[in-house]
Image 1 (cartoon, rainbow, N blue to C red):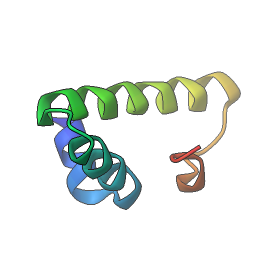
Image 2: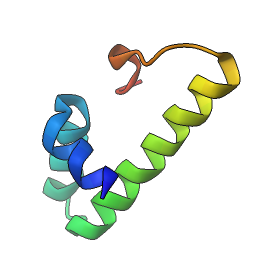
Image 3: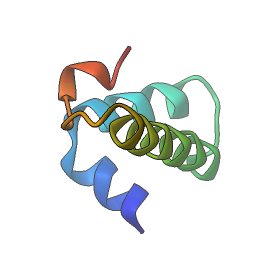
Length: 59
C-alpha cells in the first residue's frame, strides 16, 4: 500500500513507474521495483542518519 501511495503522491517515483510500464513491465513488476527503491532509500536514511532528499530518488 505504501508503494501505491508513493506512486500517487511522489512525482519522481511516478516517473519511474511510468517509465517501467512504458518499457513493457507489468504494473505489478513496476510496483515491486518502486517498493525496492523505497526500502533502499529508507535503509540509506537510517544508515547514514540523513533526512529524505527528493533529488536523490532518480540517482
